[in-house]
Length: 289
Image (cartoon, rainbow, N blue to C red; front, side, top):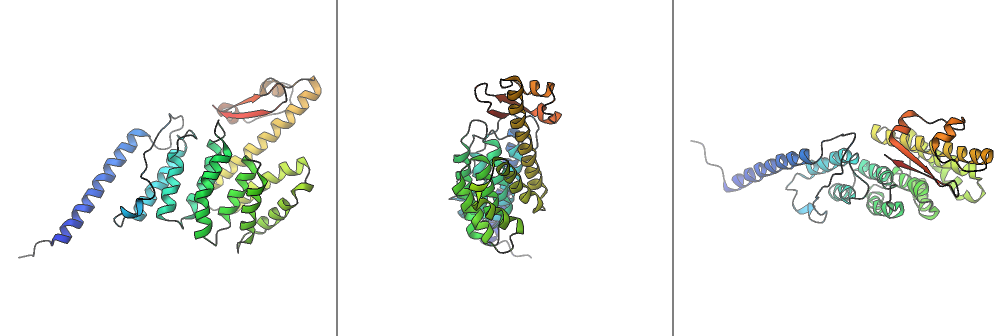
């Protein structure tokens, strides 16, 4: 006759069954709230556990919970409106559970500013991401990517030179950083000597360094989008200047510049974005539809 389960074994079994049940319940609720990889989406909201309590309630399932948050962050990015704090919360939780997991730091640095262009202060959003990324910089001393990505985003989205320079300096000091990192850091130090055209090209070189030094397809795609956006911004700027020179006024729409062959934009860009042009100074903004 087999001996009955011990009390400890019974408790462990109950805990495992409870966790499996909770996981199934959470997944069902999650599927109701936001189908993954939707293309045209309504805003979603998530209620995440505070990172402070996570280490005490994982019950040995730390890796499983970390992976859940990581996958959810990728799925929810397409539905995030840039304002709900839950998205950054994913990365706070991930860095708490596994501070040496590099990709989530990189993903948050690249994605948060992209969604924060529509009415949200990019400086504040990047500062929030930097608080998380600083943990990665400290716990992964071999990573040049985390400080380099962060310095690049500060340069592109905030025009704040000091934080960009600080993070690029950290990246250049990391052993194993590619030659492009050293070259761009030294160029950045001499930024006062760069012309406007050189500064515009420098931004593209920063993003190209990210693109050329990653084997992660998600990050590569995000970097490619950044390169395309930078290219389109330069096209618009030059087209607006040319239109003003020729017609003595700023164009009212992108269509006016296209009609006189000053610019040509990809069809997929025009389907997904609107461009507004300030009639007083020619400044423009790109807004996702």
